[in-house]
Length: 204
Image (tube, rainbow, N blue to C red; front, side, top):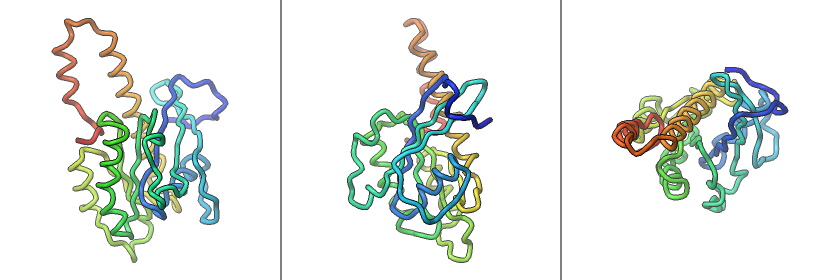
């Protein structure tokens, strides 16, 4: 995987949403991935763009943050429209943010449908002395919804690139699968049904 300048022509465009409670570090995660830096004194931003290459495909990722809207419960269907991937972020030092993950997943299902590619992030893993949510508990929740889980630190840069790369790979793979299905003749219906059972990171 290679990160590229956004000026390069892209083969594929994906919209990715970052959702989760206020204060869990969504903007920090986005800025760490896109700009490679961490600064606790920044204004909330609605979105960033990053290009990367996976399997000889240039992907342009439009990454959207709620920019504080979640505090006023104003994250609606318009925010989810056109999204291919979602990263749900919680703070491993904040039990409420972890408990609310299920609610966020329900919103994803309600507004974006069941076929969107999801990934769960437990942020601020660099603060073990104040950690509340165990890795085991988070992994069990992710397994329940059949989505990948990463422990990250936007501050230290831990697993940020890895999380986005996996999401991008899964979105690309799902897009190829969808394209293949749409190009098949009716005789391939049974094969399509078999592939439908594969749900890598689509929550159930």
